[in-house]
Image 1 (cartoon, rainbow, N blue to C red):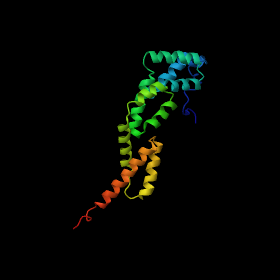
Image 2 (tube, rainbow, N blue to C red):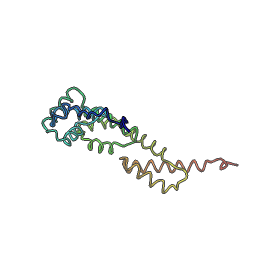
Image 3 (cartoon, helix red, strand yellow):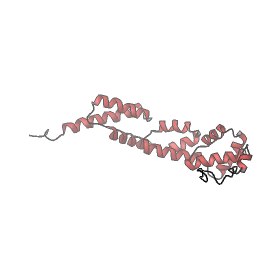
Image 4 (spheres, rainbow, N blue to C red):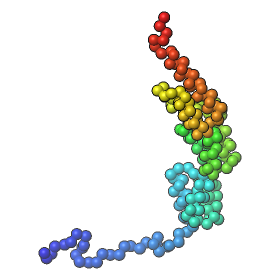
Length: 193
């Protein structure tokens, strides 16, 4: 088989070496550039607290002084704003997951938000908002086909995990059970005279 070419080869010449760029030569990236890159990448995906960004930079061995300098600059230009981050997180988690202030405070602390910013963000939720969210959660999770005792136990546990006080949870679950019993006694056919 003369003249047959093998796939992937060009007329007998050796393949050219890959182009060696500046990134391959520079083994140690500039720490400040690395820190900026990490912060921008994370902030592009979602808002972050200052502590979350600092932790991400520490995992990549960015020196602490460089981390502070970059985060100070990002704070100055408004890219890092723990107060705004806290307000957004509280609003979103309260509306989407129905979390109470107590659970939200734990979440903010875990994310590294300071006490002052956390208090200000949590102030946007009052007792009435919290109770309305708990009632909505109970209405969504209520099942008529389940034993009321089992149902009550499950709903109390769910509200507890979401940060609601035991007193409020017990009162609201008791109201749901009472309403359910009243509705089942008002079924068609029960008022025939």
